[in-house]
Length: 253
Image (tube, rainbow, N blue to C red; front, top):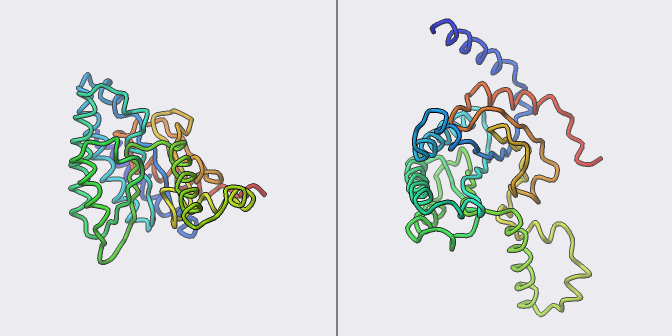
């Protein structure tokens, strides 16, 4: 048992030394997938999988801070997930609330909410609102928490807000339609004012976006990892960063 740990430690140090620090992504999106399957592997209740996934989020943010990654977007609960059983959702909401408390304890983390707060229990929506209102004295990392989030809904919400603002400004709908461009939509997204993700990671072996950052990820690099999220190791993360650093980003050119 000791030899594999020694080898992993050696390999991890090699990966860190080999990283091109000039090519570390500024913004990483993460689809934290596989919590329920991880629990099933151990014949454990689903709640244990969600808790292990929450613990991994805190560990992952520590890795990101060590490497100087500035923005992380976490896909924690989609609008589709809201159809799960009330028992599972209640347990998951409680775990998310506890995770927020732990994030609140880190004075260097700022948090931004992404999603539909009206879909969440009042206590969770209120907790999220108070957390996002907190301004760190010295921000080391900015975390977007996508909770009750859907990519299609985000785009619809952006267009609705744009149209309401245009009407309030006295602009006609034909005028809005004729002048509408990509930047106009971007200004109303949940991530307005933030850089688009450079890298999107999905764990659990699934290779699809599932509505995550559909607009913002148009030119992102994608990395799909077989590990289930609670089993995602620092080595897996470093491999993703190494893979990203070796790609040539063309942005459609």
